[in-house]
Length: 212
Length: 204
Image 1: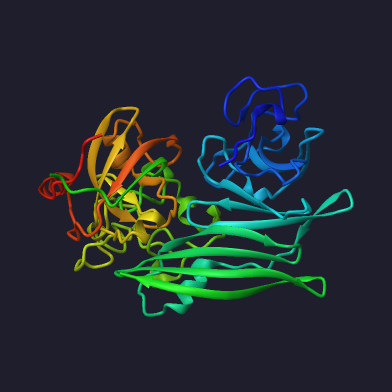
Image 2: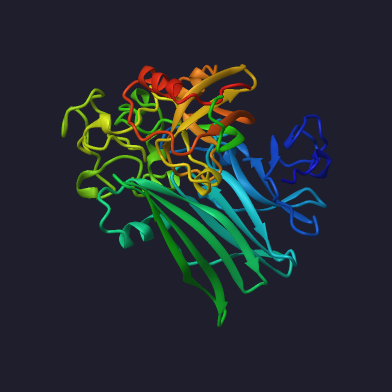
């Protein structure tokens, strides 16, 4: 596990990955996502405080005051907020974030782990702009439930456990769906997003069911 | 000589309240977790997968005291992977009560070593120097960094619910013992007695 030293993003006055206020920073506190730095170290994903005017209450009434941003590590600039749906209250452990970069620094996939599932969003660099990649949606839990129709009940959850870029044209993902039926059933699903004719598509590569 | 552990991991811990009759309720103030956390994506638009719904529609809660009997009126039926083998699925006692039973969410590494849902664990807090018995009560977190509210409390953490509290540092040592239990427990006292009989390694 690689944690980025504090001086990379802002002047450090605290330990580990939590950053204190610095005039060089847009907003605080700051926290780099583990293993989120691009291969060259030029970019990273970071949890940053939202500007006050952007903060809103969520449906449970909690103030969402943080979000996940793509950051230029050289100039300490926020480049783009990954998604408004990845916002969270600083008091909440969810969502938690992970990242996967392509080896050329030009593609990043950001994974948010919610209480019951994971979501993935990807960006690619075009010139000096980071552009959101239109990945087809995929619900691992729903996929498993529809294929395991013999299992009564519809509670459970899923998580993305692995994300890896294969060059610039393909993103390989592994997800696990957990069904809480009278039998314990788990389905591991390997799928990939790939670009063809300029459009990103989804392909299920394999799946495996385990029960006990 | 005590039974040797199948696997030992050291993890931080988020709090799981699943299986508690008041895990999710119509009013968040009555519940151990925010109702949004039972939805995919933690938004109202996301399907409900954290508690039972009518006709499994993912939208309409089955409510205790209205649709079915239950100890927590106005609350829903939260489920766990470890379940009583014969009780009805609408009976809240079918599920491992996170507010009463020490349980962990099974790590993938434990699964790979043959640890099954229901098996005994021994959990230890390095910070509080406390050791307790528990079971593998749920699935859904491959890192295994999740445990029941009762587990955290019995390890010395003054947590009240699963809304915001977490153990942020890797303080919790979990020892898994494969093929040691399949019995469902309604109380921690019963679990402790059975785990003691199994002569698990509790020395830290």
